[in-house]
Image 1 (cartoon, helix red, strand yellow):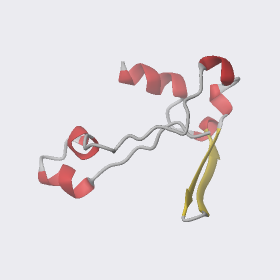
Image 2 (cartoon, one colour; image 1 turned 120 degrees about the horizontal axis):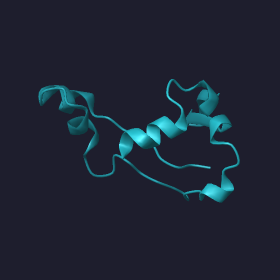
Image 3 (cartoon, one colour; image 1 turned 90 degrees about the vertical axis):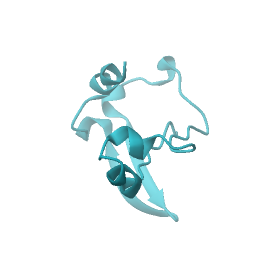
Image 4 (cartoon, helix red, strand yellow; image 1 turned 30 degrees about the vertical axis):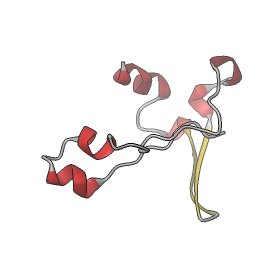
Length: 79
């Protein structure tokens, strides 16, 4: 299941004072898909598999249990 991909343009960000929003706010920088899950579809957000493939090769394979900030904290930070 894909939910979102976070992109940053670091050189653009650094050229404009280093603020995170400047490196993350360009069109197409937060794609969603192919679908978004409803809360009922997520049994335990504290233990969801997350993985990343680049050109078919795994680059990351982990779980939300291993994140520095848990899912609830990340949602609250965005409000």
